[in-house]
Image (tube, rainbow, N blue to C red; front, side, top):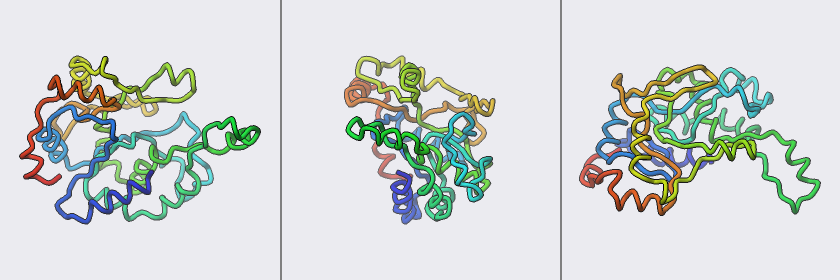
Length: 246
């Protein structure tokens, strides 16, 4: 996943007109029209990268040290918005990436066909690289002071599933619950609390108080069609998309 992100950023950097780089999933929807999103992102000289101390989970592998010391280990959403200089840091990196390739890998899921081999596989160190790489790399370069340490993409985590399976899963919005009030609630969020750091991140862009989120996920196709048909999001200004590079 992170290799694919590096390749995407490398290709985007070939055009000097590209000054902001936004990673979104195929289940994301915009909460505002293009003009608002563009002005919001371009008004800030910072990248928007959800980044916090990872102290509860055992994803850090001690074998990463000394190239990645534990105090520089970070976690966060993979849905990031970068300024050009930070995108260049990611593309140019080989050292931290090589450590991740060796020591930060997803543990394979249990497969009943593998029998007792599952016991051995489940003892492997479990790490989700796309939730750690960018955050840790920027921390290693002492660039956290140049970040808004939050994502611009809203996700509702299914806590009931987390308790049942000891995992976190993003809730998928269906046609039934993708309603105007839900979108209004998302747009009304103005701060994010990070429990591991006892930190409240008040949402600002260029020192101006702003809504925290520009996008939201995960939306089914039916949910997205409802938002469009009911004009919950608002009309996109196509001329702005054509006239102004992002």
